[in-house]
Length: 82
Image (cartoon, rainbow, N blue to C red; front, side, top):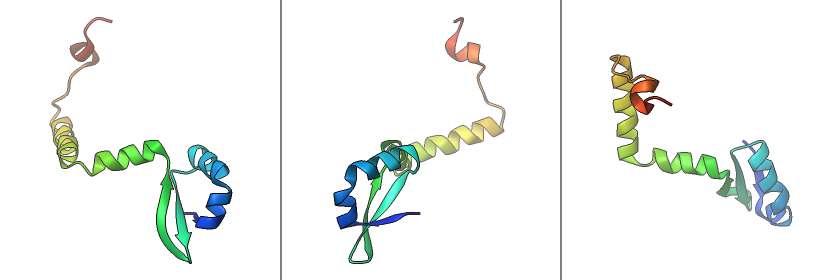
């Protein structure tokens, strides 16, 4: 987990964005020594949004239960002849 001071981030925003997209999912931002926000990779952010959706989480649980019971479809059943 990497933390950067807000002033340093402001002065190096382009580099920080590049680093997040290449190496990390997020960068914590501190102001006066206290973490106040985060700069996150868009894919990571979308995953977080999906996880906050209760319907999405319920669909994942249901799918896992069906998989454990062997209730799965073959590639051909889903997509037909390709």
